[in-house]
Each structure stands twice: as structure tokens, then as C-alpha cells.
Length: 490
Image (cartoon, rainbow, N blue to C red; front, side, top):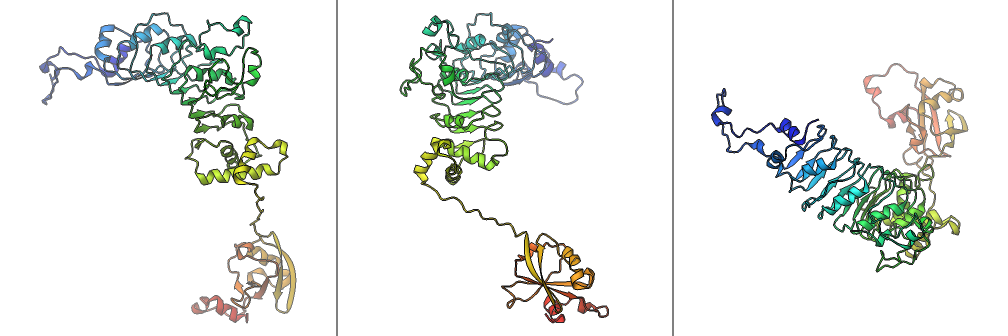
């Protein structure tokens, strides 16, 4: 397996700064400019070496000469499995701002002593590296400016960013479910603003809350595709009897912290819960209490899914429950009109429910909009069947007609009554209200359905037989509907 240096030489070519201009241009018939320093002596500031089977760093001096200007490094899908080699690469790139090590198996512990700090590194991607929490803690200590961290697809079933050696009453009582870590963090990383934690195995929100305490200024959190069933930590909290859950707004991370799921996320603005296992509207009520939350994603959750709600109704119920959220599921900003419509729909949805089933939000919205009248159920579909008077010569009869039938089908069904075939039949529709204004209307289109004439009970259809005359001349075949009505004395 090649080293990073060998992969660089394969991609960019080996620099030959000793070659003279004459040697470099031997056999070439055109004149070229050869700079004093080969452009391949330094690699680009953005260095991408994905899937190159890189396992080691390579010669130190050559790396220093080539990579000193690298600012963004992408080494995803290689064969790196030792942190010694990773740091051997990174220490020669002092200007790094972005590093992607995804899909390199780096589950082994960090056994080297790190003296270097990467002051400019802002973004670190460790997806599917299976890096353990102890290694994460050590890495973060050397990245004082890190703002964005990716820890997705690492199979974490817990979070261990706190100082496990600190003692508390729970430890003395041998309580394995202690949550007193919030005040015992070895070091809080206040610079980190964005954390991606997609596809891990964490189920309890109390574990997710540890991320909030470790990164107190976190603004964006992605926990999509994690099997989180609830945001409620009260059930787990009962297992730790040494805690006081009285809420303290001024000091939310004190030993008297409350059971609220948002206590660890006072600065969180963006939360992605797509494809989690949240299934109760109570979880949305808890989300509404996050003090800074503005953007939420909840697609792919069993919440409100099924035949009970349409997608539009589900969105309305979510918007009404989240008064401070500005963007839902990645759409545009929720307008004032959409919010008001959603809140009114929310009131009407619950107004017919028993009072015990109405959430607190219902009563809050009633205070804002008042008690609303139920919407009138207006059915705009055409009548299915109507009673029409059919007239053929001196015969007249009232029949019930399906308005979804076509004119052609109606003619066929009138053959017995009329006494002549449908092919010789002319139908004229008479609107009972417009009889004296516009007269009969020729139903000339065979495939047109009856309801398209706005036909109603009480209207009339006149049946006449085509005139048994000789073949019409060209001028007679282009007569108007008014002239044709006159021909039949209508």
C-alpha cells in the first residue's frame, strides 16, 4: 500500500528541480517558459486523495517540502488505521483548515504524545472511522479553533466526552446511570458550533444531552437516523435519586439542573431529527421549549404518519405546535399567513376532541384567536344523479340520469324512448333558468360528460331525428347552431 508521498507523486508527478531547461525541452520543437521552481514541487491548497489505499505518511522532509501550503485535506476511503501515521501527515500541514478522514478505520487508541496544536483547523470529518471517545477528547484538546465536527456512522451507543474519573454522590452509591457529568466536564469546547451525529446507535436523549454540555455554544445538531424514541429524560432521571430537578434559568448546568431536554442546548438554532423514532406529539411540545430553536427537520419519523393525516395537515399541526420555529423540513420561511392558517386549523382540529385530549397549545391558541366556528363543509362536486325531462315530439317523460355519462352513452340509452337509432339522434339541452334567454343548446360533442353542461334536476333535453333529406351542400353543412335549431322548429 502506498504512502501519502507516493500517492502525491502518482497524481502530480515527481518534481525534478535539477533538470535544466534544455533537458526538459529536449525533443520539443516549441519554445516554452520554465519557471525557476517546478510547479509540482508544491501541491494545491485543496488536496484530495480519496480511495488511494494510503496507509502511511511517507518521508518527512519530502512531505514538508510539498504540503506546507495545504489548507484542505481529503483522505477519505484510504487504509489509514494508526493515529501515528495520521498525525505524521497532519503535523507537516500547519495551515490546515479542513480535514476529512472518513471511512478510515481509526478505532485504535491514540498512543502518541501530541505537542502540536492546529490553530487554524475549523472543520474535522471523522465519519465511519469508529474513533473512540477517548481519542475524540484528545484530538479536541489540540484543535482550539474547531467549529464543525462530524462524528456520523461510528456506531456510538453512548456519549463519553466528560471526565469519568470525577466523583459524585451517584458514583459513591454505585449508580451506573449517573447524569451528574454536566458539572464534571474535564473541558468544555465552547468554539464548536456545528455537530453531525447521523446514523449512530444512541437511543436516549440523556446521551445526546451530553453533547450539548460538552459543546455549550452548539448552534446546529444533526442526529438523523438515530433510533431516538423520545426527548423525555425524566424516566431515566428517576434512577438517579441525588438530583434536584428544579429548573434554574440563570444556571441551567448547575447541580440543580432540571429534567428538561433543552437544558443542554440553550444556543441550539438548527436541529435535524429526520428518520428518528419519535412517534408522539408530546415530543413536539418538548421541542417547542428549546429557547433558540429556529429550524427543525422531522421527515421520515413515525410521528403523525399513516392515513390519519394528509401531508398538509401534518405540516399544519407541526407549525402550530412550534411557535418559534421559522423553517420546517427545509422549506422556505414560514409566513405569517401560513402560521395563522395552521394555528386556526389546529384549534378546529381539537375543538371536537374531548377536553382531556386537548394539548396545552390548544388553550394558548384559543387565547390568541378566540373560539372559532367550525368550517362549513361545502361539497363542490357535481350531483351524481339528476331528474331530467326528456321530450321527443309529443312524448315527454321524466328520467333519472347519471351526470357522469357521456352524450354518446345517453343517446344509446334513449333509443327505445325515441324510436330511432342513436346515429340519427340530435340532443338539445334546455336550462330551466335560461330557456327564454338563450334557448336550447345543441349537445354536439359525443364524449362530453353531462355534468359539464351544469345540468340540474328540472332541466330538459329535447330529442329530434336528423332530417331525412338529400346530402347537404357545402354551404348547408356549415350552418350555425341557431339555424339548426330553426330547422327543427326549436
